[in-house]
Image 1 (cartoon, protein in one colour):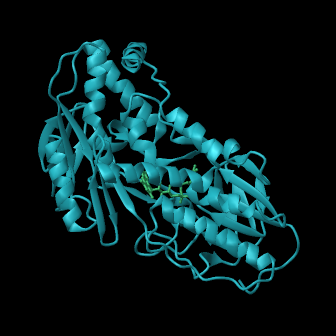
Image 2 (cartoon, helix red, strand yellow; image 1 turned 180 degrees about the vertical axis):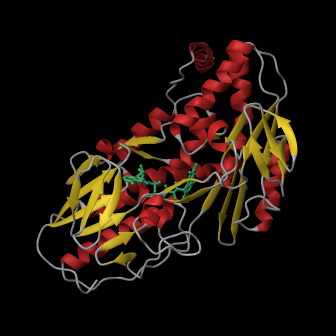
Length: 406
Ligand SMILES: Cc1cc2nc3c(=O)[nH]c(=O)nc-3n(C[C@H](O)[C@H](O)[C@H](O)COP(=O)(O)OP(=O)(O)OC[C@H]3O[C@@H](n4cnc5c(N)ncnc54)[C@H](O)[C@@H]3O)c2cc1C
């Protein structure tokens, strides 16, 4: 940090319009000394904590927040581009459309990409919870079964017993039942199984929570297969521990890996697969890496990405104002995992809350999450949209409208 030049109106490039990048840009935009450009592949911020609802709810759940809306009237230029490379000496980046942008400071918050662990068939046949197109296809797939075949798959599989897989599984049965009811298909029972390679679910969380959540899943008649290795997915089945199960409905929630940009651009990668950063989240002179990309203890959570984005922005403001820089302090994260209707597990250090109260806390946590990024007017719009019905299927739409009237 000592070598940084101190001219006025510094050009800051922020790459990645997710939690970390957006928070960093919003915080910096309060200081007129910066010329801020946010470059992102997508025009929207994906609010991943709501992604399981988007995948399993009939109504529209707005997990996409347009960047234009977040930066309305803000001193931030938004560019929709994929960044491919960086020239650390010239202080420039190059994009997929062969444009070049220069920077005084650059912040990377590129998030992760889905990891299929090279398991045959995952890319082709599994529905990926992280990918919005794939979620749309999954819903179309269920509709096709009921509308065209008048019959549902007997077996549904969620691969991965981390928080995402469990949230997804908790809501899946009700989605399938609702669609079949709307289409007059009588199928009282479906088998939903979670496949997990580890000997317990939620391997990164305390063991007592794993036990209680296991009981909750069993109550919802969701099967859990632990120590089970997915070997292949075909167009009609999955193979687990050398046994084949018929299914065309497999949801992938098993893994992600760091963005390949860093490997392609000679950043130092730790054994955790994260990017090595110093006490200022800096990797090289004037280059910062935050959020899911950075090797910090709680990397991999939206809460951490927001914390990191704000931390780097505030340090840049201190730097420009010739104030002493602060070193990074970790912020302990809180896990609130909803499983089925009106039930969630909250785990925060030694504190645990399960059940309806946990579910209420999850609602508050989402509200706080939105508030880190948006003002209250924008948030209330989000909440109204959450309840707006926006299903493509006309049969479901009529049925759901009738439900609302009853
Ligand atoms: C399904 C799911 C549920 C989750 N639930 C929770 C939860 O409940 N609580 C929680 O705290 N965390 C949760 N997380 C984790 C959380 O979403 C991430 O930790 C968070 O999104 C990380 O923020 P980020 O800024 O590092 O990356 P992201 O939010 O992923 O943003 C990365 C951005 O960079 C863009 N980008 C990528 N590559 C390029 C490139 N080369 N050029 C330009 N732009 C690029 C992407 O388009 C994207 O806009 C969940 C994650 C998933 C997948």
